[in-house]
Image (tube, rainbow, N blue to C red):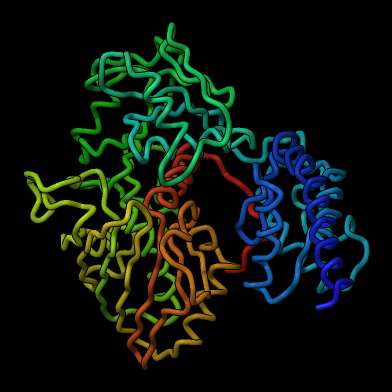
Length: 484
């Protein structure tokens, strides 16, 4: 390769870096001033580094076959700032690709047409609902990730305010609680700064004042004493999973609703956002967010059932170990779970296959399931072995799921990857409920086997936040509109 070619490649990279650096404050202005949340084919552009922004642009070629650079998107961001937009989630990548294919030259005129419903809407709320106080009851793996997401999203006006966390103990553990939020062995460092207010028992994270309440039961807490009222309590302890147990939260002053981050028992509504979140009514005071596995598989199962029909099938979950298991061999009330999690694959049960019916009644009784816990700390996989009612080959299945992941009401739930080199750690931090691995798809007549990765911590927590928004009557516009 000639020196001129080498110099040209490097200069092009530096030029793109400079444009991405110019774009970052403009994206921040869209986000904080106008409550516009920009993305590139589902990849967020908010609070992202220059390199991440450039990588997100590169991703577009993988899914669309079309080159997209910051030279294409920066003019769009500038134009959006002139349009006084109302709040919305806007896929900048889809707009940029559509603009390139249109052959038009006037970016602002194009955006005025494509974003007509929010142009000039800056002075309106546009999202519905009023600011809602959120309390995290428990501060373990899911609780801390939820805290990170809620703090990150607050700048975009999502109307959810993290006001408090509830933990057990005597009150001398604030530094350790802060440290666990600040540093994470799986998800990396907290994006921002955290300080401790010892005198008032609080954490201050990126300017968010979060009261730390020490209590052994909901009955001990009066949230109104801390200025918290009409709150949603997110119970991520798993201690109570039925209506009777979770109703203890409703007896606490200042609590309006409860969201459980585990499968609910009895008649509790188990909600998988994107599938049956429309079933949440204003009268519902206790809701379950189901399990991480149920959230991962139900959107894919619905997409397949809608297009090809599912006669029956089996779900095998290959799941990372969790805090419920033992580090070394020790007593555990569950079968096999007492054996060392980092040293063994542990065959265990899963209720995810049966739980599917709560979100997708049409699949009731059609699925069986099992699970294997494996020695990885995060990211799991569901293997869906399905008997379809209509024949489909591998290419047909993959093309369909790719379209669903890019342009459908399930695009926030289903992601798609087509690489022969990806492994579990590549999906840490993925915000979708599940990711279809196209290279692993098997199809023969009416039999199909689909492999679905999922970040059982972060992806699931993103689904929980979406349910929180729905419970708070927060309604976002997603533009350009997805095709049904």
